[in-house]
Image 1 (cartoon, rainbow, N blue to C red):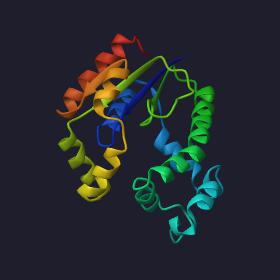
Image 2: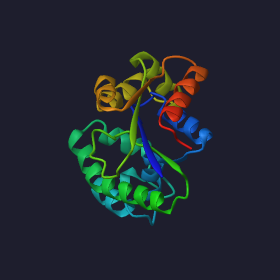
Image 3: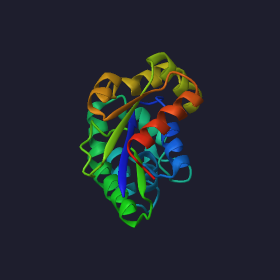
Image 4: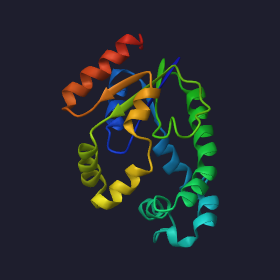
Length: 195
């Protein structure tokens, strides 16, 4: 089994790249999706996160309102660190469990914080997806229905594209159309000899 990791800032297109790897045959495991799942009522991180931030982060169904939680943590570095200290270990444990039970020959991990939070999982190659700030900003506003200010606050908390590009094994610049992205993704797949 080969394990590749896709990372990138918000709005860079890492989910689109991961979807392309899935189309080529990889099993994709999204750290964001795992994070969402472990914070559902009755799951590993739910009680700890509610204890940290109080019941005001819950919606009418007693589920964690991720937009409300994001507004809190992205405006306060200490609170973001507190959230990460509770969730990161649990996220990586669940990702490792899914890798261990996978029968795929290639697993693609989509991990936004690959280089900013120490990843304990052994990977064979890392891919950074980058895009111009204005393009990322426009994508986030459309996708999340947030204001430019909210998107910029989140972007400011992430590692810059230059850092990601310097530390990744491969870089996909995603300023063009979907066809260009597909070609770049397929080239990496082939160069790594993935199946």
